[in-house]
Length: 193
Image 1 (cartoon, rainbow, N blue to C red):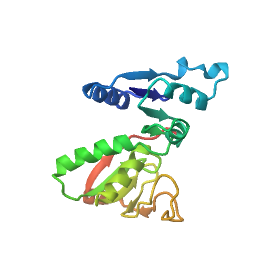
Image 2 (cartoon, helix red, strand yellow):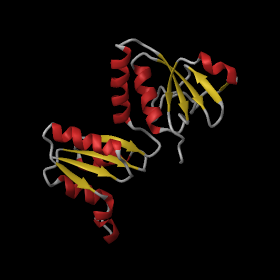
Image 3 (cartoon, rainbow, N blue to C red):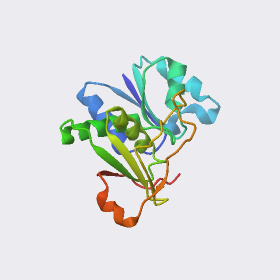
Image 4 (cartoon, one colour):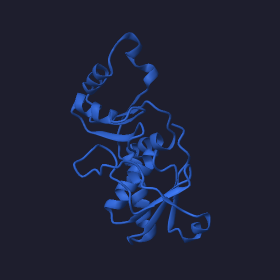
């Protein structure tokens, strides 16, 4: 028994989890924020602890607060799949994208340039981390600033001892005529927050 807890609007991610789960024989509880007793004073912690008592095996959580899925795990001690948390991460999207890229590239390591608002995109943050760990060379062109970073992508997510002191994207000038020299490109939409 799985719980779909989507506290933010979602079309593709929620439907992907629901469809994949049904193909695997998973029954879902659909947890909608407007149906919760939060307005009556119940805390999120109490809500999730109570839901866990219904024989739930795992949660799929999307929330506007960064690290919220970690809190759900801490409260319930159950597995939690992160379907997007604040401006932090979207690891499930990154894993799907990495699999698609692996299939299209037939396992070859690529030079990939992220175009768009990659420094604020949780999907780009997660994808950059996964693809770097898989051995791809990553660069960024941040269209909101007209700048880029070549193979200088920092660690993302929770602070770790290996985290560089400088956070964000290293920015170097890029002339407009240089765009024809870019490697494989990954376009993201502008981030509104």
